[in-house]
Image (tube, rainbow, N blue to C red; front, side, top):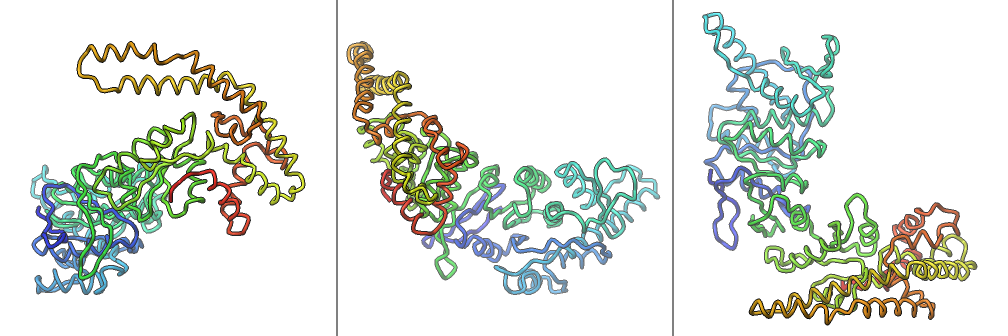
Length: 539
């Protein structure tokens, strides 16, 4: 199937030899309009579009009618002897109410009428064939196929096809009285039935456009459902408009179109994305958002980084990518991708044990660090503690609270000085070894010489003693900000017992600061300024 898509710079574009097409892009970028353009500009292809705006009110009972009439009403919203008019004007006027972008699609009753009519006629055909001795004759109906797929997805329910209606009950039910009408199913169960029914009812070799295939569906069954639906209609091509990045990346043999915006005169700013890995959800999330992107450490479910930076930098779409190495790797990679040249991608990582030279190198690649070793240390900044004290009516106690926190911080560093010195030494040794091994060589002899240099140039004792001396200097000078910059241990914050001064559990302090940041008062503004003072992100 050769599918025409909107031209790019006057050049006609087509998609061929794909099982599916996925449109991604930010809200308002014109994805639905593009799908309508595709629907209206491929007259030689049978196209069936399922709108995101649709009613899922399943009729409790329908009556069969003539099969051809039922099919035409399903496909075009009306029946007419003029088939050419049906496919163009009839469909636009009746199925889409002359407003295909926003019209509420209300065809569940028509779908059920078509399914029940086909089921009725095939039942008669089956009965007549068997009466005539053709006992091997079988003509599986669409409703039977729907039942099979539906029950494989909703494994705790079973369907029953009755005269003019669908009934449902729990899989373990044995009593006939326990069945209830399908119209009483949950939104998700009805959506699954509707999607399967719509796809199974289109003619052969159709292009099926599904706007928001994830609607009303739990993500745990989304991919499984559409895999089963696609498998049942391998003669058709599927075009999806989706906000589910996991779903988009799960499609096999697919072509992704990144829709950036709708220009005018039915022209779109979009790109055909090539060479994207099926597992590259991050790329899809970047492309599916209008905002600048800030990659951070942590996961989507549990990340202080994401919560904090989302409040400090609302102009960015904050995306956690787990480890600091992932932040570095992805940020550098996306700087080089021409396909996302107009999307600004930056990264922010914990300072950890990185030196100024290493950090400066990262800055050149739009990767930045706070002026503290761990993100949790930001919550121990004097300005942050002072604002919390003021908000908690403890402004007069601020000096004593800060002094106590500082004392506990220096005590912690004194206890951990050996392990901290070892961490810094290990990092510096590794950096030096990496530098030596990556020096360009032209022969095996030169490479061997570089290996020999490691022992001469990487003096472990000297590096360790120097690191330890620097830490001791921090203790001797009681340099609190410098201590926060080097203590690379998430146990510091609870060790200071800062939460105790406010009568809180140890984990609540960070939650409270984040809560303050979420408000829109002057205190929140001052708090954001306090954090940003120590976060060197070039916005």
